[in-house]
Each structure stands twice: as structure tokens, then as C-alpha cells.
Amino acid sequence: MPPSTSSGAPRLAVVGIPAGRRVALFQDAVRAAGLPAARTVSWPDVLRGDAAFVPGETVRIDSPGEDAEVDRLLRGGTDPTRVEGSARWYARFTSAVREVARAATAAGSVLLDDPEDIAVLFDKRLCHGVLDAAGVPVPYSPTSGPDAGPVRGWADVRRLLTDHRMPRVFVKPAHGSSASGVMALETAGPGRIRATTSVEQDEEGRLFNSLRVRHRTTEREVAALVDALAPDGLHIERWVPKATQRRRAADLRVVVVAGRATHAVVRTSRSPMTNLHLGGARGDLHAVRAAIEAAGGSWDAALALCERAAACFPDTLCVGVDLLPTTGWRHFSVGEVNAFGDLLPRLTGLPGSGAEGLDTYGAQIAAVAGTAPDAVPDTAPASNDRARNDRVTDVP
Image (cartoon, helix red, strand yellow):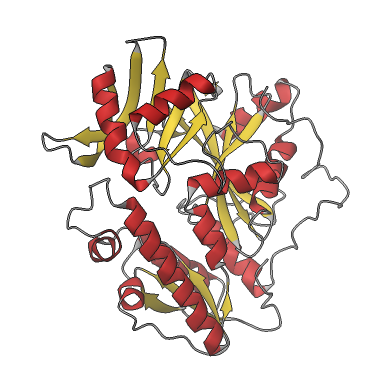
């Protein structure tokens, strides 16, 4: 956990996009807590080597997204809709985060986000391996962990699917976000294939993100997409059938702040990708809790699983955990853990979380300022609000 700053009102700084939504929402939370506005350190300044920090500041590292100049500096090229370049983006971004940490530490500042945690969180293969090694249930993956072999193209994907008996998988860019480049792939013998993806490929073979999910039904089309994505690194994991709500696939984004699950939102979709910008919609959280209890599971145990996943990154204040319920709402696994998974405007805290009435940013400010309840340790006695039990288990 990042060092406590509860000895006095913190002086805050945020590394982000000054005109972006995330910084605006964070500043709103700072003002609502009665604190002076956070000093903003812009990502363009960081990437140009012009960033500076002040002794005694508490520094939040926020997303470099939603800025064309920053995307160009990180990825190269001028079109932010392009899919390629994620490996270059990752290398430059993690280098910049480490430089922020070096400069902040040298100035005597306190970091709320650990650079090595961020490096793992932005590599799906490494993140999956860390969770698996910690005993957190995750979908099976042959590309998990630092020792897994590279996926060089469609021939490797085909071989892995056959060797591991996985007819349905997700193929994901190792460093992607917001479902960029993700492919939900189904195979059923020679010549029978279906890929669901938002990726478009032009006549020159270049890949672009789209807001429309589409299907590819020939091996030639799928192979061309995989071969174009592979140079940036690919992660493959078993496609676990999700539970449904109103006949739509459903999963949850759970925000964990200072070790405690504080916010949750249900995401539903008619496609395998539940991302809201791809046509997903927020579902009914009360109905999810009722379905879990009716199936003999426990909502508190589901949240505890998210807290276990977040505990793999103890030096980062806040993460967003993608919680995957299987058919029937009885079992759960963790799909991903996101370094910047807190952009959920107007969502207030869960009952019993200590963040009631606060959005995700307000919960983080409360944790930093020492006004939030302490995180519940694993040895804490069960309560009616946050009972721990083992009734939510790994997928069968």
C-alpha cells in the first residue's frame, strides 16, 4: 500500500491530461474534500523531460489517454484509431512512468502508484501470471507469465488452441486497453471459424479501431488479423461462458481502493465484449446480488476475490478489477486488473464500503487524507456488510 499521508492534509499533484475528464473528476473530488486543488503535471511535459515535483507532494499517476499529442509521442504515427504500435506505446509509457517515480522520489514526494505495478498491469501476460501465481482464479492461458513463449502469428494461435483443447478463446493484444484489437474466437473443426472483433483492416493491411463489433468467418480473414497484431505481442485465454442478465452477457468492473472494494458496475452486452463504448450498457447491480445469493454464492465473497486480485499490487492505491461470472452466477474468475479502471462518473460507493456517497475519485481522496475506514484485513471477523467465505470459487 502507498505510504500513509494521514498525518496532515496532503498536498496533491496529478500526472495527467490537464483538459481531460479524469483530471477534472479528480480535481472535483479534491475540492469536495475541502483540499487545495491538485497541481497538474501534464503528460506532454513528462514525455518531453520537463516535469518537476515538489517536496512533500503526494503524486497520483493518471492515464495518458484521450490526447492525440500524447498518443503520437507514445505510439508514433498520427492516427489515434490505429491498433498497431502498442508495444512501442508500452515501452515508452513504462519508461516515462519510471522517470516520474525517479523524479518524484528524488524530490521527496510520495507516490500513490508503483511504476513496477503499472508495468505489470499494462502487460496482460504478466498480469495474468501474477494473479495465477497468487492463487487468484483466472481463465486458463497458455501465454501467461514471463516464461511463456511468444505468439508469432496465426500458426502459433492455431497450434495453441489444438494443443490445449481450447475451441473458444479471447485473443488480446498484450498491451491493449478498451478492447482495442481484442478478438473473441470460436473454432469448430477445419474451415469452421468465427471471430468477433471491433478491428477493421484496410486494403493495405493496416488495423483500425471501430465502434462497431463485427464478425469474421473465414480463416483467411482471421489469420490476416492475427498476423498483423502479433508483432506487438498477443495474450490468449480460454473463453469462459459468462452469466447473463436479460439475455445479455454480463460482467463487473469492481474498483478497489486501499485494499477495499468500494465501487462496482455491471456491464452487459449482446457481444462477447462488454465495453460500454462498443455498445455495452450498465446492468442492474441489485439483480446481480440477488442472482448470486439465489445460486448459493456470496456477494461479499465476490468482492473479496477482487480484493485478493488488488492485493497482488500492494503499492498502488487504486485498481479496477474485471470480475467474470460464469453461467449461473455461482463461480467467478478475474479477467484483468486495470491501473486506470476508475473512470466511472457519477457512480457512488457500495453499502458498507466506507465510500458511500463518494465517487471513485472521492474514495481515493478519502483514503489519502486518512478519512476513510482502514482496509479490511484478511483476518478481520466477518460482518453482515462484508462477510468473508469460500462460497465463490474458481471456474469448474
